[in-house]
Length: 122
Image (cartoon, rainbow, N blue to C red; front, side):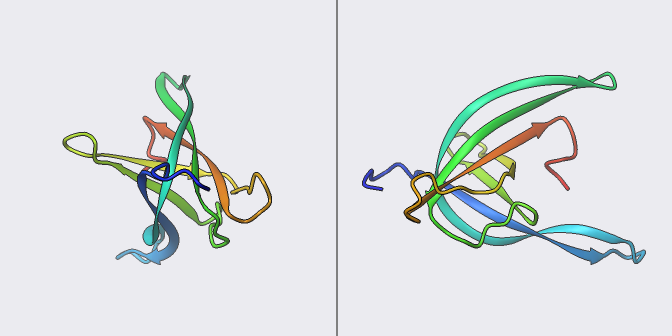
């Protein structure tokens, strides 16, 4: 990559599993999978209304070292931003990663965060 200090955000990758609750209902559960360093690039934000409620959606791109073990079907990114007090936590639904130059040195993951729903909790 050649640009020291660009991967300045610590991200946590979580993986979903299914577990039964006390009533034997199957629930999705997010468990820690791995942590990494990434560059966060904000792409844009928008808001939309559904059923009398307003939601905010933010899109971003994460740049990190190449890895082959991230699957958007079962993984998500949680980012803690400790530049503020208290630290902010954002949960990102990810798209399939891509290797822009094809050299397997770095990759990009585009992601979206939706506020105002339970999408960031489930």
